[in-house]
Length: 393
Image 1 (tube, rainbow, N blue to C red):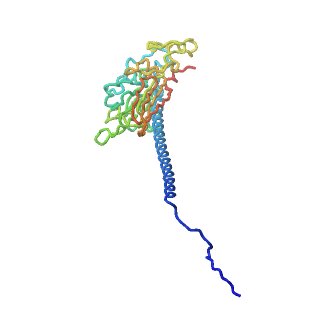
Image 2 (cartoon, rainbow, N blue to C red):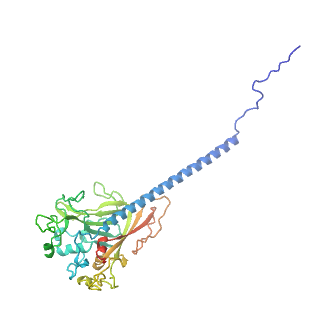
């Protein structure tokens, strides 16, 4: 018997193999390119969004810091330890003798200060200049951005010289200190306070060896400068608008206003409105003559409602369109509204700023027509030391 053997491929039958056709390859490449392009566009959009968010965050932070600096200083305006000007003291029953006859020059040479000038400093804790300041301030308020206000804030340091960890430790030679006397004999003799580097006034024991506490005299001048820093040659190193502050300190051995230092970059405009307490609780509009007279109480047996003094509450907010606010406006200022125009640190490609900005009741700011994004921030601050001493039970 014969057996037929059939030989087969061990892998069985297999169809013919071949690669992609040219058309299929082109279609695959096209789809791949579309996906890559979409991913690239997504990446670019996310990157741009992140950059804009970073700019916005920086803009908000800059404005927040600026508002914080200004608010913290304004809250302490008019703090003179235990001293209160007679015209603003509801417990003073005689005719006040210290209502200011003029507005103080923030940059007047210290050697020219006299008793009347120092009384004006105590009576006017803040000043606002919408125009030029004074000739003496030309070297202090330098490179100011046009259309921005200048704010001057005055008060005694919040802590006593040499007490605890106070940074005002009394070790700086010729530093100017405010000192309110606690000695009745000195106060009766007309020496209720001094601005003196040595602090000669006495405490309540009236013993010559026992001095009353002294506090550093604070006068801060805020404005917006057209640059943030200078190079080694003293030239402007940039064109970044910056909120700056000039402090009162010592140059050599002379107390004087110091050169301004940069606080916050990206602050392009700065405006202040004053909250004026110019109506008494009885509805009478106040004028300077009221502060030259003793307080008139509605009920002389119950000192609660005054007819010729304010009540510590702002009756209106004003922006001084002239160069400087008046004496009656400044002595009746019990609050302030701050307006800040903050600018992004970097321009945004393809963006044009055509907006008009309104900072309070002042003149609107015309469009900048550049690629920087901007936003207005504002806050209201109560001058606790001034408004609080006008309140009655």
